[in-house]
Length: 517
Image 1 (cartoon, rainbow, N blue to C red):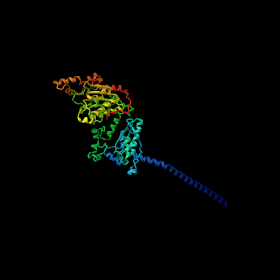
Image 2: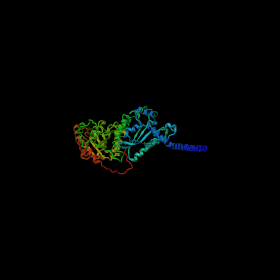
Image 3: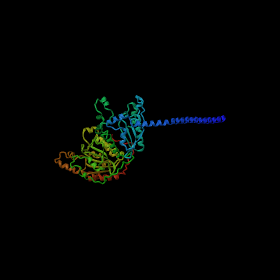
Image 4: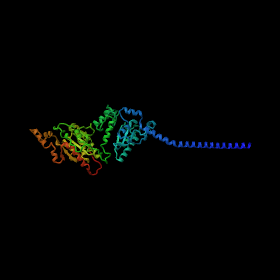
């Protein structure tokens, strides 16, 4: 019995030992598994950390200088850099670049983490406007007042280079206090690389002006929207707010080609190209001294009466802007009889010349409406160099190789007649209305010179008008191609533009033109 019990006890002890070995093995396995899990966690912790850092940086970039500064921007009635881009571009089309770029300045405490903002003070990238590619940069005033740093300039230069490579335009939304003082000369190098109550533009601010010239002037007076759109001509248009400006920018963009290698966009046109305009037959007053509005003629002729005027508040005696004829973008130039009788002066000549050269640079046809009694006389104009500045407009029209159609509605006197895209400046098609007067000068002034001391001045004036103050002298010499009924103007121009669409002009090679600057 004892032997049997001993055997049973030995069996139980063996089983218990086996169980213990299993437990021990399990413990060891558990330790191994735990070790493996720890190792895996150690291996995986690095990517998780980087991922979190990426998301944190992205989140920081999206708020720029922080919510407090965003709120301050809104209080001033201004959108943030990213809000402007969102409004300008088609929804969901913006692709940002260089979101993680930071400034490299270490002086004046700039190396502190609190002074590092992902993306720095400008948002850059590409997107689309009505499906057409465009690159854009928008300066972020919430980050160091939008000031230009080396990194800021680098980001802008990069998208400019990319845009040039693919032949796309660049739109810049400026909201900057200038060069970043903390970076010194590096920020100035960045400028060399790229070169209404809420926006100001000036070389030196009011404080500097006060210290140098002792003049007291406000920001608005020195470089506000009114100053630059009515007096200096630096800005082309002013708008009520950011939203109004960006909506108009989208509209303006639709008139332009993506580059000088591309044609201007052609839109579907529901306005018949052969539409007659009866009201034009009576729009020019019978009295040659009575004014009328040239904008009314432009609206009557172009597609859907849509005209995007450029610089409407500067040099109002000349009108420039964009419209469409049978869906095709055209540049419009016209004298404005309601302002200074439509005379050309220094400012209007420069304004017109710049616009003509812009259209020629981007292959946009030019339509010119002429009612010009001459150049504005006076010592102020002569001392200011009216001869030199007037020659800019003459040079621009002569140099332009795009299709050029000219319509003389009433007065075309003296040298100003020549300047306004006349046949002598290689105008392709030149029309005159029956009311046109193409002469050296007006009848009254001419009679006072030719018939000085004549007894019957009225008869002499009538004789001059019969001989010169009408379109026939120019027509018989081929200086106008036809005398047309005003109501047929739209139909004639649309037909001519179709013919001139294939126009090609070969000019002798030269390093560059020598416009009289």
